[in-house]
Image (cartoon, rainbow, N blue to C red; front, top):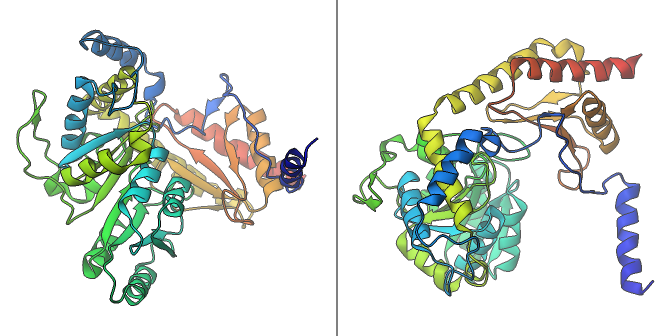
Length: 414
């Protein structure tokens, strides 16, 4: 074995010894889903599948593949129509489609920031946003999660650092944090950004489809006076009631979670999307999304619009889970904490890789598909069981899961 492979193997063995080795697992069909991001169940909807087939059949010059990048052969008229539709849905002036939320986040941050600029991220932002900061030439800082005072300190520090230099400041947050299930303090952070002249960027990955009018996300929900769609007949009927760069510089919406497919879009000013078309390597040098995936996005949002009961059922399940779990607190060890969350992401903090894996393994044997989240994805000692609730979970499913957790701890004590 050559020295490079030896080095790689050594790192794998080290990770295995600490209980952190990642392996690929296929989805088990006979288990009850409490781990996927398919919050509304759209990925398995037969009705949606039929709607997509109808939509695809109506696309002129339909092709299976995009055949190239957007700047070569990959821009189909349907894409432009969908971008206008999504810009209106998300109350933005303009929208640009990407192949994934990861590529959109990374490309956006790396492209818009320049050498003398300052990037200030919430400490819990996604790896894709962190990668964007590493690819950028800008200086970067992290502020304590949702801590407005610490954010203000970092912005004050950046002003001192940038003295006598021309620079822009960007604050990067998520609307719903994937490993805590809590909300970003959008209104508070937005106010701090305005105070310091910073540009706010919000990743809406885990709120897309769930919050806001017709699933247009948490930020739009926080600005309800600006969420009246004006899109009619495939043509924008004006730019009234849009969320401007004065409110937020850019928002990223991901379609691989509640929307049930894949892809993403960045929403902001027309100047921003034009700039990304010209300078974002993650957009310029990659094959465009397929028409089928784009038709899926359009049909999924239409289904959410026409079936508000999907969101209602999801939030009923969230409330039911938390009520039943809290009623059974006495059956759990004191160190087992259910974090506060009013999103589909419910976090049971266990602590320690081995006990967290053991609980997940016990539940999986009982046919509840939950997954442990271990270090280094989360901080060492803060390992969690990440429970994802869905509109399609029944009350019996949820009761069974909580009873399974109780049984696991009872087995440990006996």
